[in-house]
Length: 207
Image (cartoon, rainbow, N blue to C red; front, side):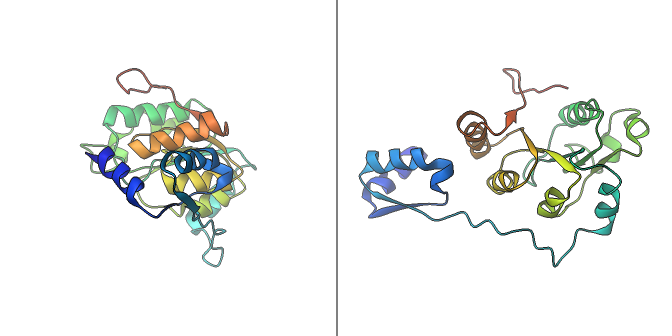
């Protein structure tokens, strides 16, 4: 039904407007133009520089400044994704194994009211001084713009995809929802600017 609705709209419209740019998805837009015989207009996205008139919160600015340039792993999976507790713990353990300083900003996993109660046993003590798992909102563009951030682990939602491309970070992708999977394919297979976390057939990922 969804496919029929989309193709009906594409077939009967006067022109097609897509929020992207030729450098990123040009060949796919050209294909749509040929397939539906409609002019494709590219309308973005608009990519403003981080608003530095509102500086990064002191809490994060001071903490990140303790580490060298490009040394910190930043992980954020968006506000729509709530992990199962076991997957949340695998994520934490995997990032711990990098041996690098890290900031993980995710919502508490299913069945947990707070981040702290869901952390793996002994985790906080092992990563004390170099790792933070945070269950509330952070100003992502300003985090990514901080010179200490060197790797961005992302769900590859539309906004995060563009923010990662604007950053100087290495990009690791862990998609969940349909558009995130497509965005990940674009980033890893077409543009070759990222790597994707490998999953088992069940969708499970491990450290």
